[in-house]
Amino acid sequence: MLQILLTGLITVVVGLFILHFLIDDALQKPFAEGFVSLLQRLFHIDYWNAAGVYAIIFRNNKGLLLGIGFVFLLLIFIYVAMSGFTRYFKKISGGIDQLVNESEEPITLPSELEFIETKLNTVKSTLEKRRDAALESERRKNDLVVYLAHDIKTPLTSVIGYLSLLNEAPDMPLEQRIKYTGITLEKAYRLEQLINEFFEITRFNLQTINLIKEDVNLTMMLEQMADEFYPILAPRNKEAVVEAGENIMIYADSDKLGRVFNNILKNAAAYSYDDSSINISAISEGENIIIRFRNKGKMIPPDKLDSIFEKFYRLDSARSSNTGGTGLGLAIAKEIVVLHGGTISAESNEVYTQFTVSLPVKKT
Image (cartoon, rainbow, N blue to C red; front, side, top):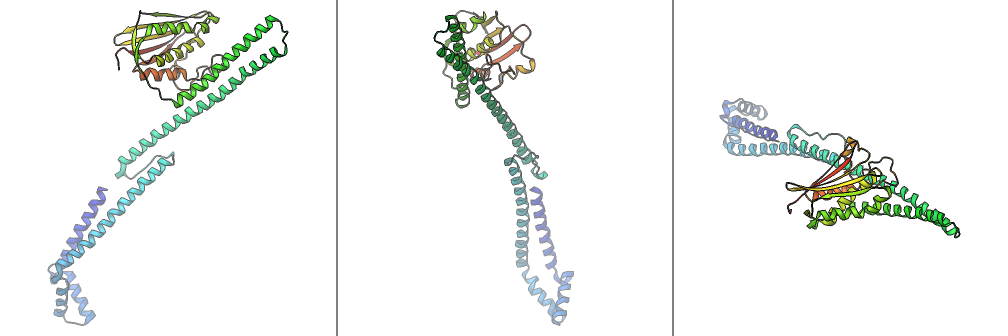
């Protein structure tokens, strides 16, 4: 743009200089001599009369001619400048069209517009990453819905089948009736769990998490959580053991924080070995409260540790109908912890898997 302006200004200045040169000292300049000679040949007049005509037209109207020349050159300058600006606008418009049409080609503009080219390509790259992330999230969600629909059909079929047997054989032996009733109840619980997971997906996508903080007795919360998980852990001879100082207080949203611990415990209950303990500890370290959940179970590969907090990520590729979840629990836990100003992380080895939650003690 600056180059166009400089070129136009130079054109105006040079043009005015040439115009002034042509009409100044008229009879001594080649232009004047040529004009006089042309008048002599065309109109057959003598030299002095032709020189007088030149003087009337040019020398006596020097200011007027300079003004007309200046306006004419100025119009040329404006036209050239506007043409340059129009060309730049067309290039920028083309770059924006590439952005809107999601073209895979990089946006290229003239060197004078390099800063705009850089910004447009940065925006293009950012939009592409967001689009890819949204598509991947949608793909995972769709896959998950298909998986859950398939998993729901399995326990539902079992419930209908066993209830039909019980209904068709009223004189069935008591032992067999108890067995079928137990299986039906187990499948019904699983069906309830899967339906709740459908609602979990809906809540995660449509609900903004808002915190209502208050003083919370963390020790009591953890002990209560361990008691609530007893019916889930006992059938496989598992237990949750809490080791925390007496009456550790924290300023947090008790409902949301309970959801965090519930999701972590559900994960530990699903993947820990039978006949083992889930150790829950809480200690104060500086300005933070550190809560750890440790269980003995199959090692989580290092390359998957960073992914387990992603939405719809499921660690077990086999999608076990007994343990497979939506892949939302830990993602929701991380979101709630971050909203509290804390952090959540995981580590795993051949001996144990541990989730660590760090929350600030001070009111924020």
